[in-house]
Length: 410
Figure 1 (cartoon, rainbow, N blue to C red):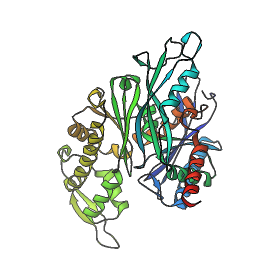
Figure 2 (figure 1 turned 60 degrees about the vertical axis):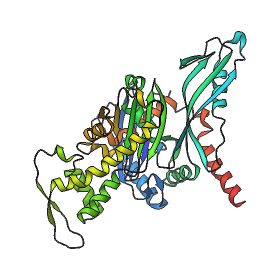
Figure 3 (figure 1 turned 120 degrees about the vertical axis):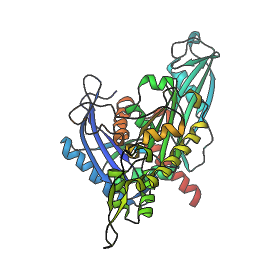
Figure 4 (figure 1 turned 135 degrees about the vertical axis):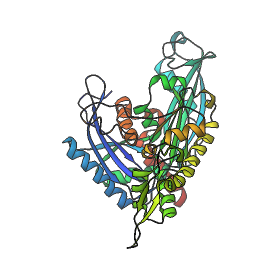
């Protein structure tokens, strides 16, 4: 655990925005938010860096805003990563218990996790997380911590999350170029889950769907553990693009119209009204019906939820989603998003609100800050572990990338 007075920074690097959330753990174990900064993101596409200079400038702007608000100089950050290059797999390992009197030790636990993660990876892939799901001792399953138990055979089922090594390295490079050290890289829907999900939801079965600008990221939990992760290559920016083309206006104006007047379901419009659409390059503005706006938005949002449902159905625990779906991410704030998701998936849906305290708690009580707050929770729980069970953290990602380049061009 980190010390109470330690400042922690979660850096959510998204396709449409970069947000820095600063917090510390108070004496009651709660996350106290002390600073927030945000900047438009113009150097990424679908979670992948495509322009280093623009990404660096956006990171600087977001973090400097957070520094001014909290009154502390920021040195290192916990960064979120997403994008359609993310892949995941479930794996299983088994060992013979070697301890005295066949009592399972922490060393046995580490050995069986290492055995489970011994999978062949292409050189261009890197392990981000190795997340234990359950342990099995002499065919007795459903065990979350086997240490101290007696047994001869120890098995472990784990969830492995991988990323493209080059994409992870580019994010690290941009943060370092901006002048900050990367403490760790964390899968964004996993981070969001730490901020918005309750223990009962994880146990009963729940899916968190983080609808970002370029992608929608899925993480499914059951019996307290993560069971499935995947990425849908559509997000809120695709809705904005549809509006821009359909209304013949700029992306910026389309985004403003979406935020101010957008509705995910036409049937939720209690009364129609006329709204003004700004013209492009000096052209005169036009008036359209708000229902026209909803008619453009709804098909794309339905597609996002349909593709997400298809990904959920690939998981063995889909039928166990007793707590339904929790939506996070900026696009989940669209009016009617939860209702449309319920209609498409047939599951109960709610909007996730980050759990935090302090004077700025109300400022970040929005699904768009779920990842930033979740990164702080991750740091509190794992900050000193440095992810030793997942292959060595940031240094290993950098080494893996160098090895890949050497093999290709050396």
